[in-house]
Amino acid sequence: MTREQLFENIRKKCSFLCVGLDTDVKKIPTFLLKDEDSVFAFNKAIIDATAPYCIAYKPNLAFYESTGVKGWIALEKTVRYLRENYPDQFIIADAKRGDIGNTSAMYARTFFEELNIDAVTVAPYMGEDSVSPFLGYDGKWVILLALTSNKGSQDFQRLQTADGTPFYKHVLGKSQQWATEEQMMYVVGATQGQAFEEIRRIVPNHFLLVPGIGAQGGSLEEVCRYGMTGQCGLIVNSSRAIIYADSTEDFARVAGEKAREVQQQMAAELKKAHII
Image 1 (spheres, helix red, strand yellow):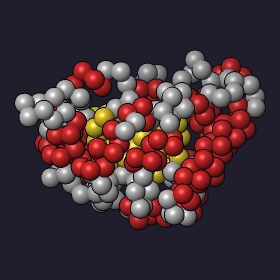
Image 2 (cartoon, helix red, strand yellow; image 1 turned 90 degrees about the vertical axis):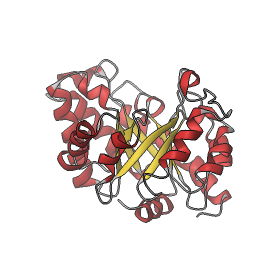
Image 3 (cartoon, rainbow, N blue to C red; image 1 turned 180 degrees about the horizontal axis):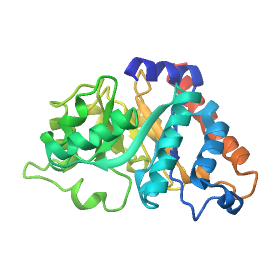
């Protein structure tokens, strides 16, 4: 999916919501456990209920890898279901990969060739040669970890280097030599607040994937105030607050309602920015 296609979908749906498919078999409604593939059954119901209100889905690989082969099968079925029924959805593998070049090349093959996913999250700590193998695919995206929403982000990402610059700013600056805004996005946690203003000075046009809205307490209004661009420039993820909003047989309908509530808030922000 190209940048322009993504932006057009944002305008069409008046939304920049990404639904995180962090599907934990210990948290899904118990009546689904009798299904042969309870994870896929849950995902399918969530997708059908939320697809009108979002522009992306983000399966977190840990939740699928935790159950071995069964989890990978559920992931493959989920991606195939999206491709066949909702082809306009942007699919992100939240895998946080990043290794020496030949290993990264295998990861890239997994996600872009075998699974046909649009984007993958990548850790930049090992440098350019660990990221570049992901950049050799037309229409595919690298989403580089920049400033995350977890408490431990303080340990390294905000650590000041010799010139007084936080390390995450070096990541933002250096990585722009590796790829353009048509190939690379950045992860910036919603809990980082006004840091978005500083980040936009360094990467004024790149899309940002923003986790931390909802269960983690990030403010959508604040993210938009400091992070939105003329082409939106944001993909805001919500996982638990949507997919686990209800644990009864009504779970999918409630998830759809929660997604619609977020979409309406996003539509208001897009109107405020004169994008729609």
